[in-house]
Picture 1 (cartoon, protein in one colour):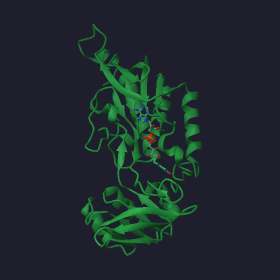
Picture 2: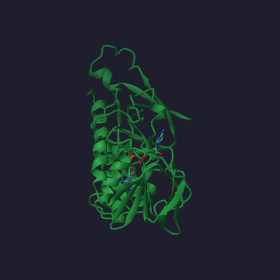
Picture 3: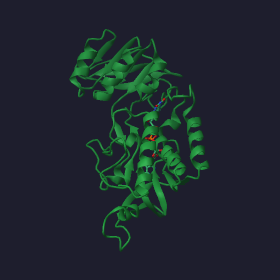
Picture 4: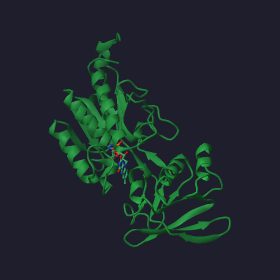
Length: 318
Ligand SMILES: Cc1cc2nc3c(=O)[nH]c(=O)nc-3n(C[C@H](O)[C@H](O)[C@H](O)COP(=O)(O)OP(=O)(O)OC[C@H]3O[C@@H](n4cnc5c(N)ncnc54)[C@H](O)[C@@H]3O)c2cc1C
């Protein structure tokens, strides 16, 4: 029996393990792919406070080492579901004693693990554009996070592809220091906030490229341009840019828990800053939960808050 089962070995999950262990609780972290999560593939992180520059893989190694040296257990396995058990027989009167003994079963393909609380930290994936050149030039000009990588393109021309709020906010963020920002959208109008669209329309260095789809990202060692096709005019052309920011959607990894906790329309776990979900004893942390900013710092903050809330729950709180 573990005090806290953590599903997802990204920054949120590993931070939760550190805080859980340091509070004297037993923790186990399940990871289906690579410990570290999304940041593993990032060649350089330059916005984590206190660390001027570090590769995503080294950042992950340090974090994993910190968690395991404190006694956190790790399990390389995909969690397929979590079941909530009724507390032990004989404790049916409610109150703190019952709460403290609530039991969850975490199920992988091969085993079932019992625990007193659960932290969901499965993160998310960015939707790909699915065009030629995208995969090859990832990290060499193709980015899925303007907040993370925007500064690398200071004074240069970039394209943002997408029509929702993320794309609009990315374009606004980049327009502060990029020379020119092309905002490429396949429809005639944007889906995002009208106010942001208005502000962007007034910016001299932002250009809307509407009714237009991306066909190919061009470049040898790094991005040199993007080939686009205007659907209305049936005309294809190339924009010479050094960066392509893809903002065409986010996919939270919460499917196995859809019938367990409340998710929002986009599939994120509904939870506030303390990580509490619709089910007492289950907490959510990091990119998988409802929130606006998804970064390493916010994932670490969420892991902290969710672990401490889980510790309080295990200790008999509510
Ligand atoms: C290329 C790239 C570069 C980035 N650069 C920066 C940057 O420079 N600075 C910055 O602040 N942010 C950056 N980010 C964003 C940052 O990486 C994320 O905000 C952060 O990693 C989120 O952490 P997380 O733990 O919530 O989720 P994730 O990192 O997504 O980790 C979740 C983990 O859970 C695992 N998982 C999911 N479901 C299950 C399951 N059912 N069972 C077991 N395991 C499961 C996944 O495999 C994954 O490893 C970048 C993102 C990308 C993609």
